[in-house]
Figure 1 (cartoon, rainbow, N blue to C red):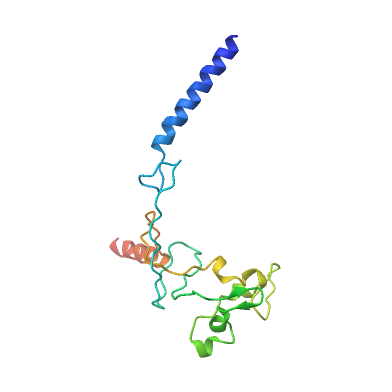
Figure 2: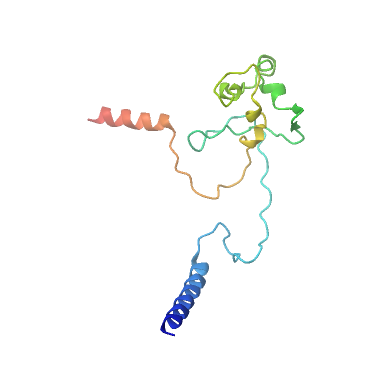
Length: 155
């Protein structure tokens, strides 16, 4: 009977703690309780400037600086490669896909884009004018090197 009472007390304490935690949990949903669906924010406008953005973190796939609405990317066709393929960049003046996109799983180079890197928007996304949901304090390696160089000169 004593074990039952202790178990019941622990369960009550757990339920109370969960209720308090649910009230104080940090989310990206400012005023909507977790159990409810809020009104979604309007879709951000796509940026169609053709100007490359600086990356937000190391190894980030480059963002797409133009609209891709209506682009067909499936097993038979990849609209991105009409400009970014090795054979098309001279005419299109678009950057060529990275050399890593030609490597298979065994790090062997292929003549064309490897099937595992064929679906571009699996990693690359279009740019939008959306406000960042969280702050980003990523510092590019060039800024780090400049900072180190300035500190060495101050000694």
